[in-house]
View: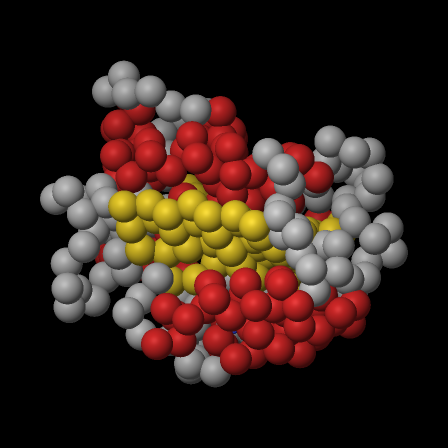
Length: 289
Ligand code: SAM
């Protein structure tokens, strides 16, 4: 436990899928003026340098955000959701070369309107200190609460939010195999308390039993609460036995009606841009309750 540091994975293909989806969800929910409560159950450090530290060691951003940028700069077509995602990354770098990658807390914080609130959970003893420091530098800091506690057990305490409008990102590291079980329990409780919230769950698409079963488990939970969902997966590589993460997915409960269309436009481009040795694939499914 606690060996996971998100800096190793900042700007990877998995971050691209997760953050592009997240930005679309938030922008859709912000079309209405009512206050939003946004919960990021697994926050990480908030923002990462891509030029030094862990990210420079892993070089995952090379096959992720930098590969995507090269693809677009080469004149390949792009779509609105990819452009909006890249605008957020560029904004963090003041429009210049990308040296810094915002994690979900910074992406969300920068998009907050005055009426919105952001709740961040982080359990890692080093990450929480870095996160608190980073959040303290933001002009939106007063709208943000940071909790150094286990989000799986604490999420229900924040639901339903006062305005009954909410977005919850659940992005565990799955470092602890029990995370799959904790996720299911947390989602059951969350939907009992706040059935109309928008929930975005990230997962690594691995051959491991718990990971392969996760989308079906989420579908069952959504069905038992009569909720709609969208399920997307992006694989960039298909090499058996490879330890690198080759694919990841997003499962969204109560998605906006626009999400499937946006992902159906973005996923083929991401697969083409990020695919390695013809191994790229994507999946997009949905259900309307
Ligand atoms: N959401 C971040 C982003 O997109 O930039 C990345 C988060 S990373 C995948 C997962 C984080 O969750 C790690 O920093 C880990 O320390 C933290 N974590 C693990 N278990 C947790 C728990 N039960 N409650 C809160 N945080 C947890």
